[in-house]
Length: 273
Ligand SMILES: *[C@@H]1O[C@H](CO)[C@@H](O)[C@H](O)[C@H]1NC(C)=O
Ligand SMILES: *[C@@H]1O[C@H](CO)[C@@H](O)[C@H](O)[C@H]1NC(C)=O
Image (cartoon, rainbow, N blue to C red):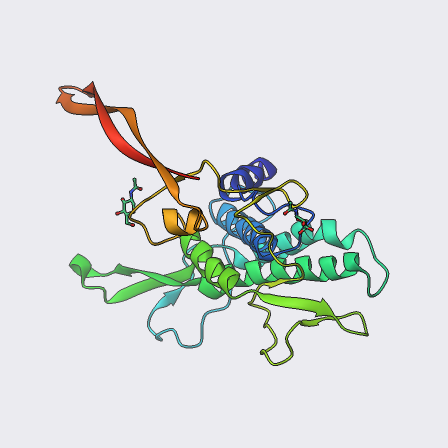
């Protein structure tokens, strides 16, 4: 059951096939981190919701700074268990093998373990105390509090920031990963690291697995990654008129269904050259 849960999670959240598995670039770093984070999140929550036999509500200690007259001990997300489970389960595939010191494989292994841990820490750093009021007519004279995980979206956003600032690493003479650029601060356990440069995603290249952006739909007015300027890598774009079918004039009928008409609309579409 829990495995099914986890694999669903992986499929939904990790469709990041753009960075090929042969390259250990910042996209790979993000994929590992968010996979590990997803396992912590799913398992911690499943414990709390009573879906697993091996764990239950969080038994985390009462935070020292919690106001004295508030109660500690609602059923919290079991972060401790989720964290340990993710460490064993997700790191296992890396720990199975050992590689010669100083080899590329050993660098890759250190990178993956580092990023798995960064993902787990993102979940744990964002978890917080949540409380509920009791007392006469909502007076909130009494509060019960528990440990609560952040919305997974927030974990994703935090890791996206780490992705943007991921540190390039290399092996030193003793076989340990160190920053490629010694004038940069070394990454902490919360940061993402990578050992390869990302391939050029603008151009199709089979050996790196890059699909290129020729023929991709882009947004003419956006200045972001989906905008034609960035996505088409300066090659420009073609404009098409496309016909799309939409549901429209929807009416609610008692009770209970919604009936819609189908309308066709002509829209402008932009495609990278
Ligand atoms: C494809 O990528 C490889 C590895 O980065 C590079 O050596 C090669 O020149 C690229 N090929 C093309 C056609 O860009
Ligand atoms: C295009 O980008 C603009 C600006 O970011 C946004 O408001 C608009 O909804 C986007 N259009 C589509 C079709 O996604």
